[in-house]
Amino acid sequence: MLKELSRKKNIHVMLVYTGGCNGCDIEVVNCVLSPFYDAEQYNVFLTWNPREADVLVVTGCVTKAVSASLKKIYDEIPEPKAVVAAGACALMGGVYNNIGADLGTSTFIDGPVENIIPVDIKVPGCPPRPEDVITGIVKALPKILNG
Ligand code: SF4
Image (cartoon, rainbow, N blue to C red; front, side, top):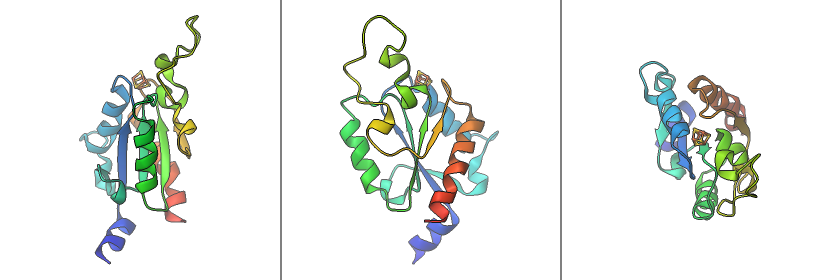
């Protein structure tokens, strides 16, 4: 009962990094924890436990080394849940996918994220602005609140 009550009153965001430069991760953590953005004041918290998560925020290009783990984490998050793919790497492989170059497609990535798990909200940027990460999380909330 305590768990159900807590989940109704709080939004728990799980951040998963799947390969990149960490620029996106810094901005995601920034939007929740920094005094400037401080999403915690609205009861948005970071969690590292998929069983407590409501929103999964995925950054990075999804290397072959982590794609199975990403799927496992997604499966462990209870319904209702939403996925936000944040940043150019998460959306299209970014610089790690050799987009627009003459070297061919990278062979060490399975991404973008939507190749591995369903994505509800896509947030662009390299890295995305904290405001846009927060907007993406807010856009994901109806799916969670309405089941
Ligand atoms: S989208 Fe840009 S900032 Fe984010 S992980 Fe990729 S290269 Fe880094």
